[in-house]
Image (cartoon, rainbow, N blue to C red; front, side, top):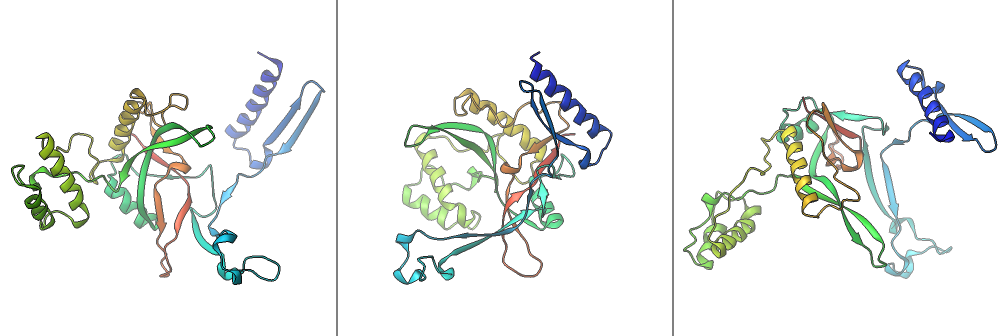
Length: 289
């Protein structure tokens, strides 16, 4: 082993001993080693960065503002500066904090209700990151783009029993779908598209085994995401250089959703104030057993 590597491994082990012994944070040290010049420096470990709620202010581009939007010094007047409040949850959390889901058998619907009742958070959307695609910007520079699968709200599953007969014409089918009281208004165009596809192919849509529902457990959703990630890797959707975002669930006790991949939520203020988008949310730990 190279000399520097051996020194670093030894110093890391010293810090791990402190962790196992339950030493306070003041006992930990950050090291700077320069073997070539025989220098060894120790610093007290800094506290981890914390995330707090706040307000982001954005000044529009100068060319988008009228002449009277500027003060005598050429700065943008306060009334023209856009303000956007954001929240951190839990308030003041760090990368070491996490939200623990109570049980692997918790369903997606129960998870939504748990966030609402226990944490006063309104679940908006959840796009589960399966991995990363490769693309290039205008300058040809390689870019890493997340590839995700929608978990919440659950993707619409077309109930074939609610579709008009394939023998109907386009106009009659549209009239029946738009006039149906059993198809939610927001889903009628999707039902119409499904009927058109079935009319063209002669095959009625089926839910399949991969349909996500509110009654599906989070554990089953994780295993489904692993399956989808495997498929995306095999068909080349996910770039091998960056790999999959989820794998090796079998035998694990839990899975952690990183802070930058957590579901999108809004706060639910009890004082009647406006909900705020949660920009920084602690990582999410989902038990698997």
